[in-house]
Image (cartoon, rainbow, N blue to C red):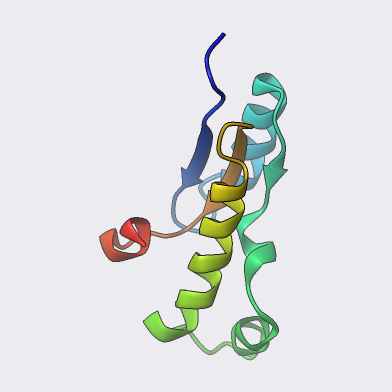
Length: 91
């Protein structure tokens, strides 16, 4: 039996991450985590006000997603993320 992987479903807004992610997780029998749920309150306030996030704003969000993924190592999981820049994915 192979060790379950953590899969990150990525794409720009509106591409279906929130549709595909839970379906994939269900098919694999692993938990799904919505990437937007990892944003700290300050980011949510900024986005709600229509202010774009900058790279510094995204760091705690990326770290939270990474912590979730690392915590699922060997257990498997699916998480969505719009981490489109290479530096975001590398983090």
